[in-house]
Image (cartoon, rainbow, N blue to C red; front, side, top):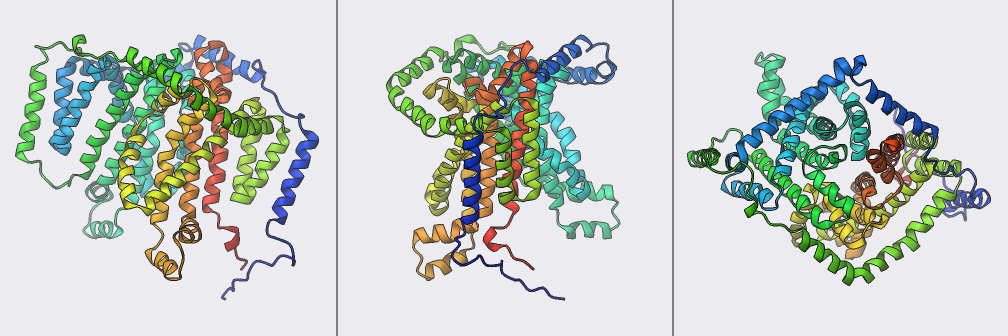
Amino acid sequence: MSSTAVPTPSRPAGLPRWTAPAGVALLFVVAYLVFRGTGTLPHDKEAPQFLAVTQLREWIDDHRNDNPLFLYFLNYIRLFVGSLYALFETVLYGLGWPGITGVMGALAWLAGGWRIALLTVAGVSAFGVLGLWESSVDTLALVAVAVLLSLAIGIPIGVWAGLDSRVRRAVTPVLDVMQIMPTFAYLAPLALFFHIGAPAGAIATMIYSIPPAIRITALAVSGVSPTAVEASASLGATRRQTLFKVYLPLARPTMALAINQTIMMALSMVVIAALISAPGLGGDIIRGLSRAQVGIMLPAGIAVVIMAVVLDRMMMALARRDPHARVRRLDLAAACLLAVAGLALIPVLPKLWPESLTINLVAEVNEVVRWAEDNWFTVTTWIKDTTSHLLLNPLESLLTSAPWWLVALAVLVVAWRVSGARAALTALGCLLAIALLGVWEHTMQTMTTVAVAVLVTLVIGLLLGVAAARSPRYSAFQRPVLDAAQTMPAFVYLLPALALFETTRFTAIFASVIYAVPPVVRLVEDGIKAVPATVVEAALSAGSTSGQLLWKVQLPMARRAILLAANQGIVMTLAMVVVGGLVGAGALGYDVVTGFSQRTDFGMGFVAGVATVLLGVMLDRITQGADRRPSPRKRKFT
């Protein structure tokens, strides 16, 4: 029996398409004017739920060594991770700077040739030149532990999920939540259960970096050609033989990308883990933020970026290698010579980088920042004040003065309209939970900052993405800039923002825009480039101008990519706005930072982290639903 598509029932004559939405909007405006200032749920720092969580923290600290859960399980995990970190740290410090430089240079030569080796040797040497050798070694040891644990757990789960669709469906929502959660949200529960220090930092980094290991491995395994699998089975291979002889070798290039992304995520998180006393470069960055001195932060930020670029280039070179190609004898000999030279110099040279070879840039950088503040003060202040008066203040006043139930109802209606019933109910549940947690006012302030930052991010991302899609020359120029921007940890983006705008909430917005623009630009560019060439040619042959081609053909057909870009922009902006709590963003980010820095406010920080997760889940589900939901103009009744 065939079904015939019937057009959507037509509207009564004379009624425009926007009549119903305009009527609903008018009702909300009237309700706001009538109930403004009532049901606002102001923030209470001494709320019972905050005090209860703080008391729970104190109870856990008092019974950490006599409670069975800690005594026979959690403490052993902490001791194991701590021992693993101590082992890596001992080996790295034992190698000293000559040994580390030689061994890493040799590995880079084997992975990608002399150019990658030269980059690696220069990068490792830069840690010492910047005067951050010990902090860099601590960070490298912490990243090594976190990546090792992430891959040891993530790759088997990813392989299992790639082979079994039921496992993939089970782990997908868990991974979604893990990737939506801002980095700060990982710290509170881990500090609660694993105390503070290197083990807690390594575990937090592992949890944050494990989703890409699972996702990309599952994608690689599920993408293996069924023909190869059937051929293996027809030859009598067992499931184990098929896995190790067919699935894993064919999935190797994509799995190398999983390792690369795991390392990048670990580097991003290991800096933030300094808030729970994890050792390394993050401590220098936190110290610079607390003193508002870019001169202290900048060298540490540069060292993190150098480490990310070196490890990224090594892994990408390894991923591009032909698995069946043999290493040339000349390359092998050069790599061995470099490693032996580095190891041979260990007894001769000091293990720590000589202070005489370091460059202190603190005073010079602070002087440049002061010059920028003095000379650009008028411009930066005008930008900051204009944005605050035109966007931030009105929107914040609207959200914080409206009744909580009216905001929840508005989100429900918008989510239902944009993404359907399931996303709407999820959004409503998240808002109700936030109201019950007692952080409604600060959540509305955070949502204001996120909304403004996302708006600016999407405008810039669309402009740059469209320009790159329509100009191959500009795309080639922009690509390395985006590559560098996406390898930088989130904390690094606070440096230019702090130098230009000091410690204000606009600083967090500026930093979050810089952080979130690169993936938005890439997604928009890819979406427009994916429009079929035949469609573009047909539009041009019909007489369309360049502007008509963009607005009538390319942007509508790239709708899914643009919606995905909006989703990624929201998630990344929310994560960065919370990090911006360190530079004056206020609201939930400030609550989380205060919760870690002041023991008596731990409950407020913990609850604020949970609220941030709920806010992220709400915004993510709405935009993801919009991506999957067909356009209202294209819906049919069958």
